Image 1: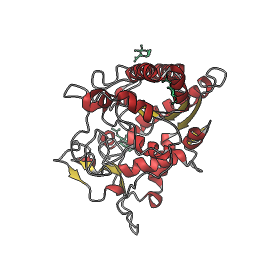
Image 2: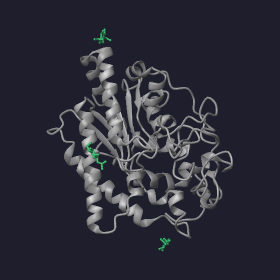
Image 3: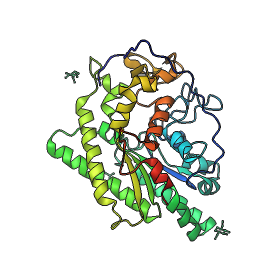
Length: 365
Ligand SMILES: *[C@@H]1O[C@H](CO)[C@@H](O)[C@H](O)[C@H]1NC(C)=O
Ligand SMILES: *[C@@H]1O[C@H](CO)[C@@H](O)[C@H](O)[C@H]1NC(C)=O
Ligand SMILES: *[C@@H]1O[C@H](CO)[C@@H](O)[C@H](O)[C@H]1NC(C)=O
């Protein structure tokens, strides 16, 4: 991917995205449980203490939130990827944030009705990633364990195990671990991959042990092309080294999970793993299909690439938010999230998912 603003003439600019009410069909799965980082966070970080916690609790975040502008904690101008995956499954939007449900004392009815989100911006597979400023994966899994125990008390073990076995577990984490790491030698890289894979597969195995069976996993992607990373280069080019590091990890996850998540080792488990490099290419390389006029700059931000300053009410806002792939310094716009989620379900020649699509996973008995 080249740096610089992509200007394409003769393109019909796509109008405002209208997100209608959810179709009147029951969801494909009884519930959805979400674990991951900022692309999936729907408000957990709003409940974490500390001024250094990344939070999207202020405008212009949520400026296009369906039903009325509202900064909910999503790092998007509207819905995020979790919301669009939830919609593909037949829900109205992502399940509510765990800490939000706890604070309102309504965890269990919600968990039984549609699931829970544990995702936290800044979180990593490793506890050390942005430590103290997020809910790391291991703690998200513990929060799920405690949710499950409460669900069983309310609804019985049998009912809960049936619910969990057909629920959709959405996972997307790892990019923050890469952004934080600075492996110097080949041996460092191998050690990093080994730790990350080991802890990721441990988390998945723990979830399986508690009854999770369907895993939709979004692999690590081209973090070297985040506007804030491209700032590091005077030309604004993607950071090739970081992209290579991420592609290497994605490959380790792909082969590692295929070997670890087998029917003999974990009977009944099914998964779909997405290739975030392929889905980004699909988003970025055919702008005619996506309507993106700008895949380099943040829509909301300031300074070079719109990525030097944070997205807040002092920021510059682009004029057509659906024409930008990036909403802020590192997160997709609502439109990019929508296209991304769609591609995971309706996988075509781009072969974004393996071994099955998110849709096949959702419908699998
Ligand atoms: C890896 O996972 C183990 C077991 O869940 C956990 O105790 C450990 O803290 C994790 N390691 C790191 C570096 O996060
Ligand atoms: C399990 O679910 C059934 C059907 O919804 C319900 O009638 C039953 O009371 C539940 N069991 C427990 C222990 O709550
Ligand atoms: C900046 O990007 C250019 C083009 O990809 C590359 O040749 C150069 O090495 C980069 N500079 C640094 C400091 O990474």
